[in-house]
Image (tube, rainbow, N blue to C red; front, side, top):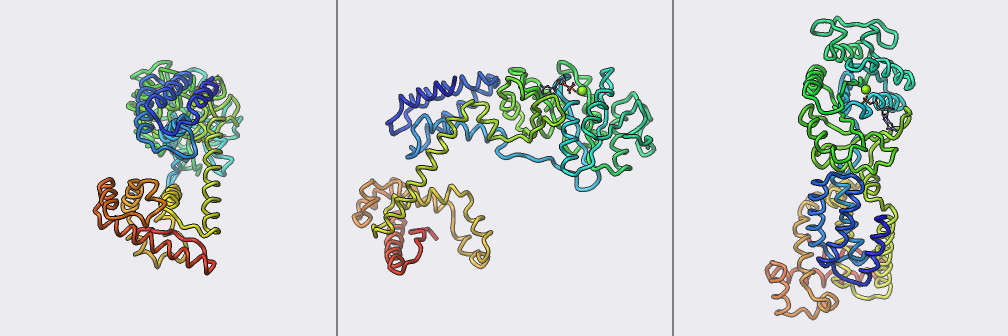
Length: 457
Ligand code: GDP
Ligand code: MG
C-alpha cells in the first residue's frame, strides 16, 4: 500500500536535513501512484503533482518533519485547498423558498440523494418539498414518491396532481399547464412551495447514461425557469477517468454551484472529487454513502484528502511530530526565560513563525476586546515589514543569530545585501532587538510575562 511505500521512503530519508530534488521526486512518484489508485483523472494528477513539486522545491527545511513527511504535508494541504478548503454550506434564499435543483447522469444517484437531502434539512428544522421533474424514466415519479415517503417529506408529483395531499395550485404558474412538461412541472412545484409555505424545494431532474445535448437543454430550461439558489451536480464516485468529461459537460451545460459525490460507501477512494473540483473549481458539498435515507454526509475537504491519499496514519504521525516539536520549542523558550538566557534571533524567528501560523494576526488582534483603541498601531503593523524582518534574520549566520552584539558594520552590509534591504533597516532591527532584550531582562526581574521582542511597528 501507499502507506507502506512511504514508510520505507521515510526510512531512506531519515537523517537528511534538506529537501533535495531526488527526495522530492521519489516521494512525488509515490503520491502520483496513490492518486492514480484513487482514480483521479490523469491530467489532474499531472497538474497537481507539478504544482506540489514546485512548492516542495521552494520549501523551507522543517525542524519537525523529515523531507518525505514534508512533501506529504504539502500534498495534503494542496489537496485540501483544491477540494475547497473549508466546508461549504447550502446557500439559503433570503426570502421565499430556497430552490435546489439536482442534475447529473442517469443512475448517478440524484433521486436517492433528493430524499436524503430533504430528510437532512427536515432534521434541521426546515420544511422541504420534493418535485418530480424527471419525466423521462417511466418509474421516476413513483421512485421519488417512495423516497419522499421514507424521508417523511411531501412530493409534488404532477401526474397525481397533488403535493403531499394538497390540491395543485397552478394558477400562479406561467405557461400552459402541462403535466408532461418537466419545465412546467418544476415551475409549478416552486409555485406550490410558495403558496404552501415550504421553505426548501428540491427539484429532481432527468439524466441519460451519457452526456446528451437534448437533456442538457432541458436541464438548462428548468434552471432558467425556476432560477435555483443552488444547482447541485450529482456524480458517482466510481466514475473514474470519465469524471472530467462529465463534470465539464455539466459545468458548461447547467453551470452547477456545488457537487454531490455519491456512492462513496463502496470501494471508491473518491478521486472523482479531486478531478471534478480541480477542473470546475466548484465546491463539493455532500457525499452520499449508501442506499438508505440517512446515508448523507456533509463533505469535509480534509477528510477526503486523507481518504484519497489513503494514509490517515501517516498524516496523524505528521501532525503529532509537529505538535511535539512545537511543545519542545515552547519548553525551550520557557527554560531560557527562567534561566535568564538572552533571547536570540533564532527564538525570534520561531516566534514570528508561531504568529504567522495563527493566520491574519491583525484581524485577530482587532477582534479582541479593548483593542479597538489600538487601531492605528495595528494598521501601522505592516505584514510586509514582517516579511522583511524575517528576510533579514534569515540572512544572518547561525553565529550572528545567537550573538547579535557581534554583528559589526561589514556583517550588517552583508545582511542588508542578502535580504534586499538597506543597511539602515538592519541597524534599526538590531537596535530594536537590543532594546527588546533589555526589556525582557527587566520584565524577568519584575516577574512579568515575556512579550514579542523586536516586533516591527
Ligand atoms: P438517478 O438516476 O440519478 O436518480 O439515480 P438513483 O437515485 O435512481 O440511483 C441509482 C442507483 O444507485 C439506485 O439503485 C440507488 O439505490 C443507488 N444509489 C444511489 N446513491 C447511492 C449511494 O450513495 N450508495 C449506494 N451504494 N448506492 C446508491
Ligand atoms: Mg432519478
